[in-house]
Length: 341
Image (spheres, rainbow, N blue to C red):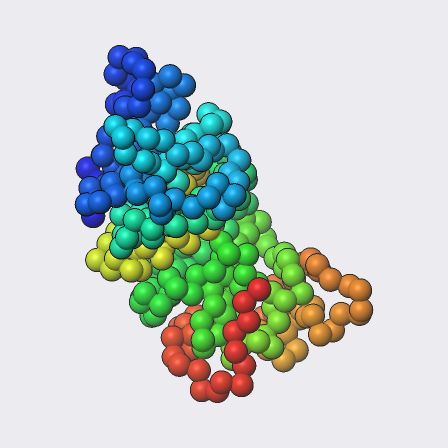
């Protein structure tokens, strides 16, 4: 269930109150037995989340994840033990707000106090790389690439595959292809060149169809429109609306957004840049499709990046509907199985 106010808003309300010593708490998620509180340390003015649980379910400190910019601790308040995480470096405030919402949502779904603590610590470990790399938000290239993946998801894959399309989105997981299904894989490339002649391929495995029943390449030629309506945040919001009635798919979508290092706190930074699709190309990758693959490399050669000519791909062009229909149907053979990195 969605909160009426965000956790960030609750912190701001606590910070607006008159200073006082000790902890100030607001209930973040009602939960019988192990409530989660939004908290402010009256002495240090640090923002925190406090999970009230029995002391025996809190693991030893040596099993806690090391978190840059955050402080993990235990605290006894009114005679009751709490497991907490506090913001130690102000530059991580935006990301910590997103982390807090994610933690609150997941902890609220835990069945026992032990599961709640395990969820809290496990998610902190997962978030560590985001805290280290996402303070400034996505680069222009990363914004464009994510927009392209979401556009393909909204316009093509969800209408054909439904919730399965969300489960197959792997772009943020550093997988070799952006979308991976039992029936095949799809790599999405975007470019803003006025007369695009090539796209960049970033791995010898990216266009290797050996692990897949089918492999497709989708190239979107975009026009950047400063101040235009089709921004990255608008694209994200449209997908959230489309998935509003499917809690499971919405949960998977939010996880995939985080894996792609998209945080709502950064949305204002992306709001001034819109995109329009000028052209879209679809290619079936097989046979003599122009590419470099792992099996063709000499010993000692790897981490290959290269430019792929779009003109050279034209003999392998395929109608979008046919490509999507292929991805939407069960595979006819089990000889090839998806291989995730």
